[in-house]
Amino acid sequence: MSQQRMLPQSKETFLQSYNKRLKDDIKSVMDNFREIIKAAKIEEETQVSRATQGEQDNCEMYVRAANIVRAGESLMKLVSDLKQFLILNDFPSINEAINNGNQQLRSLQEECDKKLIALRDEISIDLYVLEEEYYSSGYSLCDTNNLSLCEAYWRQEPTTSSPGLAMPLVAALHGADLMEQA
Image (cartoon, rainbow, N blue to C red; front, side, top):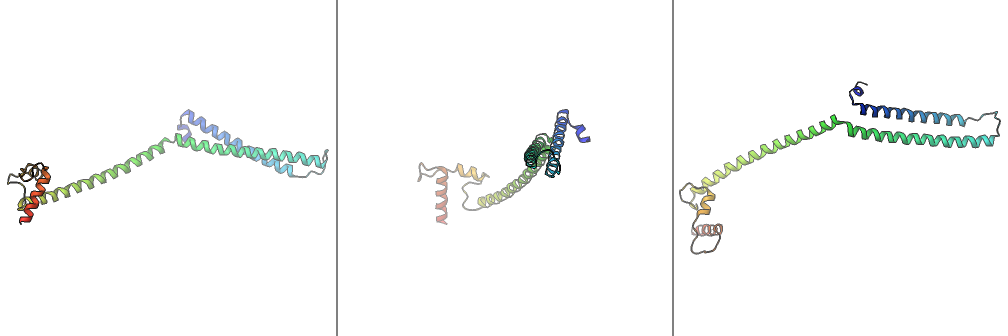
C-alpha cells in the first residue's frame, strides 16, 4: 500500500481499475459456478414438468458456462494489461538494466584499452629492437644519419638501372642484389 501512495495519480488509478476488474471477474466465475452446481440438483417437487425443468436448467448452465468463459477471457486480458503496464511503467528496473549494460560495456572497454596499450608497448619494443638490428647490419639502406627506417627507405636514391620503378620496388631490388653479393 505504501508503494501505491508513492505512485502518480494516473498509475494509482490504473492499479485501482485493475484491482476492481480482478475482483469482479473472480466474483463472476464463482457466482456462475455456484449457480451451475445449484442447477445440477434435482428438485423433487416443482410446478413444471421434469422435461421442461431439465431444458431450462440445461439452457441456464450453457449461459452460466458462457459467463465463466467470458470472465476467464477477461482475466487473461487483465493479465496482459498488467504485463503491459509493468513494462511501460517500471522505470526503476528499466534504468537499472540500462545501467548494468552500460557498466558491463565500460568494463569491456577498459579491458580492451588495457590490452591495446599492452600490445602497443610490445610492438614498440619489438620495433625498436628490429630497427636497432637493422641499422647495425650490413644491409641497412641508410647512412649513419640516424634516420628512422621509413625515412631511410623513402630517401634512398633510385638506381639508373631501373628507371620508372616505384621507390619501394627499387629498394627491394637493391636489397636483393646486396643479398646475392653476400
